[in-house]
Amino acid sequence: MPIWDLLGESRRPRRYGPGQMIYLQGEMPSCFYYLQQGEARSFISLDSGEERVLAIHRSGDLMGEASFFDNCPRVSSAMTTEECLVFAIDRGQLDEIFLRHPELALPMLQYLARTVRILSRHVGSASLPAQQRIVRYLLDQPTDEQGQLHCTHEEIGQAVGASRVTVSRVLGQLDREGALQTGYGSVLLRNPERLRQMAEPMMPD
Amino acid sequence: MPIWDLLGESRRPRRYGPGQMIYLQGEMPSCFYYLQQGEARSFISLDSGEERVLAIHRSGDLMGEASFFDNCPRVSSAMTTEECLVFAIDRGQLDEIFLRHPELALPMLQYLARTVRILSRHVGSASLPAQQRIVRYLLDQPTDEQGQLHCTHEEIGQAVGASRVTVSRVLGQLDREGALQTGYGSVLLRNPERLRQMAEPMMPD
DNA sequence: ATTCCATGGGTATGACCATGACGCAGAAGA
DNA sequence: TCTTCTGCGTCATGGTCATACCCATGGAAT
Image 1 (cartoon, rainbow over the protein chains, first blue to last red):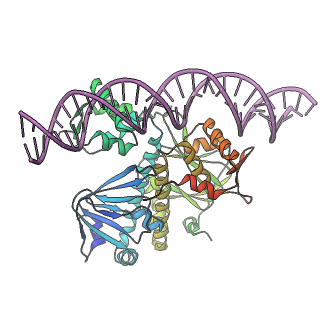
Image 2 (spheres, chains in turn green, cyan, orange, red):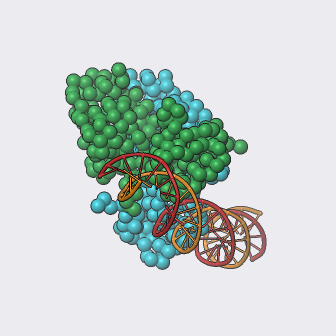
Image 3 (cartoon, each protein chain N blue to C red):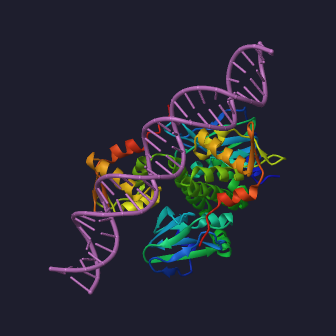
């Protein structure tokens, strides 16, 4: 049983349809969320109307826990991408749960720590040239059985903060070099090792 | 008494001189740190040899706790900028402390959550034009009694990922507009409201 | 098949900004 | 005082990338 199921003990999850907002950037958090089943993504809305995808959450993930503990307005929004089962845990419930399951504190710390790690990577990547940001993103994404990613250039661009044109140019070049192969709405990583090599030129010397 | 002093209970802090490394990007963490006194900064080293300052830690801050809980190689390094008193807490000690002070778990979660918030802001800022990144940085920094910041253009540039030239140009323009006043190694925020306005054009509509 | 739309690919233009260079002024040390 | 170093202002140059536009093609619906 996934560890966070303890959070939903003796309560019922709420069901979200695909494309529904779970929480909104800017609002004060009254609870955080346990995504028991489904997929959702959290993103930051920028002034320009752009959206920067922060993370794709899957079954077993917590969401919105940072703003909740910090008790400041949410820095990102979250939207389901498919049908989801979600537990909302507010302060009173969390207190109760911690009383009954004090052993949850450490995993919770670990979970937040992992978020910090992911965000730190983002910060470190932010000033890299577009090609490296794109390659890193591709390597970070889970692939299907055949090692294919199913995403459009547009989506990649939104995630890494580059225009579709740039994504197309980079992927086209990598394709010609044989490092990967682009399909219609999909990318096949032919030579992950080579990609890793060009994504991580961060060598301490 | 600062809350984290409980972490150092019955032990003695280690004294660091200015400019000493506390931990190094890439190494496995065996402990995290409580900066009881002094100032230190954590930064990410990029491939290019650049360093991106993540945070400036002051008395009462924890450091390196994310990698510690996550138990993965450190994503950043930390160096003192002045003489510091630092407690190092390893896993065994933390277990002990949590047994004696279970009430520390929640503040710890809050602390990590705050880090997540700060990093999220970084990520959200990354693709903004240089001027906005700079203004945001200035507004985030603590000022001295007269509302002055003591930092060089070079330092600002490293923190926000811009060249010194760009920082000088932006500050020069803001100075001419009367929003702030630049001195030798210092910046005086004359009109914070105006700055805030140009830093946060992120309007949900 | 035909139509329509999303996706992918290309190009020209210009914005933004890093780089390297130079000069000048304030600060610090001899 | 003189020297040296650091911080700041500015320039020309070039690279990277966003924007806007165009066209080709895959896929789905009619």
